[in-house]
Length: 363
Image 1 (cartoon, rainbow, N blue to C red):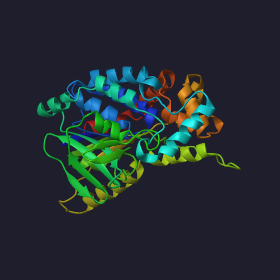
Image 2 (spheres, rainbow, N blue to C red):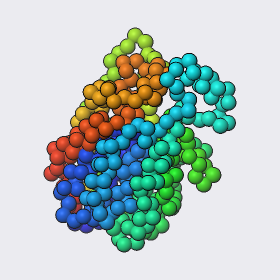
Image 3 (cartoon, rainbow, N blue to C red):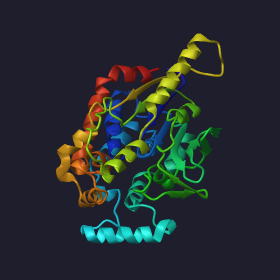
Image 4 (cartoon, rainbow, N blue to C red):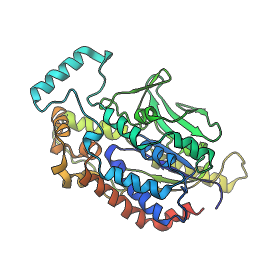
């Protein structure tokens, strides 16, 4: 085994629980308790799993088991609430009217993510990231968010050696990772408020993340295990006579959280081919695998309609979602039955790709 092994975790709201299932399978295959991943990167909700694993890089199996319990017991109320959305439709409309009237001066989202901030503060010991770096269990943790001020994909990197870069519309800067960086990376526009860091406002890291593999490679990884949340065979939406605001919002959310993993993987394959056919010393061969769900989350969430919390039901009604808004539910419904089903599917999909994953793990 040579070089450094990187873990790339994309995001997608509640769908991110799928990653925990994949990680559970991997934790059963490794021979040591310390993390096999010395470079860990996360975007959007994937940043939560990334930061937790980095803070516990010296006890990987224990960390994954704890993540599984945490995700498996989550409730939507642990993630967000709303001062705008009410059980009474007329009151909600009045609240929305007041929000629009106030403009962007003091209101910029429908939901409040304070519960998530409290959850992260209580579950992640951020000081242990530096401990794991100093002890050699971890080389780099990279969290990606989007700067609204500069329209730039910004990766915050906490590393054993200073890692910074600047490319077209994307930068990497050295930072000590804290709750605010995760909150920024998970702040879906319109739904959650942006987060101010270093005099800039940041939102969801998926927005301009056109090179999701780059932070891990720039942080030193030469092998990558990538866990995405976009299904292998995504089902096209049926053609409709009309399209509602909710349908449009759902498409926008899908676009925002669209991971460019396949595009970046294709680019990586071309680079690997160039490396194998030339003597250039500027490029290196990167071995990688992308683990994707075999299940369509929109179909899966329909089995757990009974879990849908009132706040999500009212939000879907407010934006006019048709067909019960299953696409949006698959992102925003943080309830035990659905989340555990996602974890189970992640575990099974990883087992189905065990040989290919192990090939990258073992170098």
